Image (cartoon, rainbow, N blue to C red):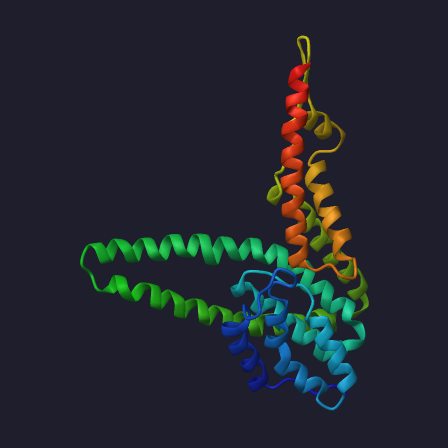
Length: 272
């Protein structure tokens, strides 16, 4: 039977999350390595006497992860609850929870804890400092302590709500897992045209008629070029000797090649 977490275990996870989530950040897993290190005190509690389950849990939590650090406490807390209640046998639910929540939580967290937080706190602090008030130096420190307190509460909130999810919706976990995975994929799909905005600036002019290749592609499928680039990247990452660093150089070379071809085709089109 899986051992239950103690308050000390949860506090260890919170401290690691506060200082170590961004450790080992890389282009392949982003915060994945740090996330695994963060949740390790809980995994040691659950699987300290079962090396095989410990290995499987570590492999699960070493997967891709990236969200606003302040919001990650909720996800880590919920994942600890899932590990405690259902164990490593159902790693699909654990992975689905991470991938399904990290995107939406990143959108909320970036807005609240980065854009709004920085704009309000540092604007007030700078205004007071310019007026010669020493309190302007303390406001960012007070606000930072408040964020730390919120993250501490988020850890326990995620843990408590995660336990409720398992106990109250145990018969609907498959539906929840599928919904979380669909949500995650939808967010990723929506990011493709928002982040990758490459367009083919190729036009053909025949008499008074001008044909734009990009407009024709948009009529077939909007954002077809960005989608093709993502599809190619995903396919290449499935190759044995390909990794994220090599993929970056492949995309750079591809961009240089397409950029030059685009100029050549544009020059040929101008001749006609």
